[in-house]
Amino acid sequence: MPQLEATPEASSLDFQSEIYRDAYSRINAIVIEGEQEAHENYLRLAELLPDSAADLKSLAKMENRHRKGFEACGRNLSVTPDMDYAREFFSRLHGNFQTAAAEGDLAACLVIQSLIIECFAIAAYNIYIPVADDFARKITEGVVKDEYSHLNFGEEWLKARFEQMKAGIEAANRQNLPIVWQMLNQVENDAHILGMEKEALVEDFMIQYGEALSNIGFNTRDIMKMSAMGLAA
Ligand code: PL3
Ligand code: FE2
Ligand code: FE2
Image (tube, rainbow, N blue to C red; front, side, top):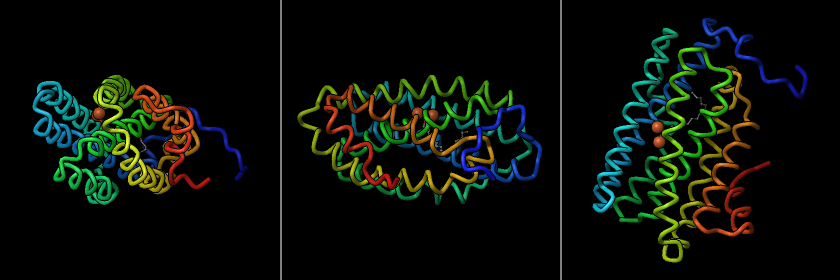
């Protein structure tokens, strides 16, 4: 196999093959679980932030729709999502969100859900769209638009309280960003089978996450340090 393999065109992927459907059973489950946890996390945030409860409940509703959309993508390929695998995949971020919520650590809750998870989702969906089957592409195009608005919620909230939240954001970044890079390593092979390359996912994630940190108020030096945290070249 050549070292630098071109990303396959969607037209060269066999969506019905055993190998594609096997990889899809895990990636599809990850996305379904991610949307379900996002739904729960925004409901939890609505309790913690009563002033933004209406907005947060509307985000939670969108996440529920996203989950249903991706469940339909799996059904369309006659794939059964491996939900046990996906719950395990998210367990560390899930645990950290629960702990942060219990401690009332809003900076950490928003960093985990609205910055890290949403940027991960945006990167994954952007890279998936050109190589998706027709049905899944239409669903994913609709979903990714919403995810930008979820990222924006976190950016605006943290930006408005930047000085007060800065240390908490940095601590949450230090604790959780290395986990994302490990999650990416864990999906690398399955993503490749779906036509998605790890390098492209990392690149898109870095762009979204760096822009988000910049919008919140971090300077270039901070952003460089923060966004490479735990990233082993
Ligand atoms: C938040 O709204 C949704 C959270 C979902 C997180 C998804 C992360 C996906 C990482 C797996 C990479 C391949 C994605 C393939 C796209 C169907
Ligand atoms: Fe979503
Ligand atoms: Fe979202």
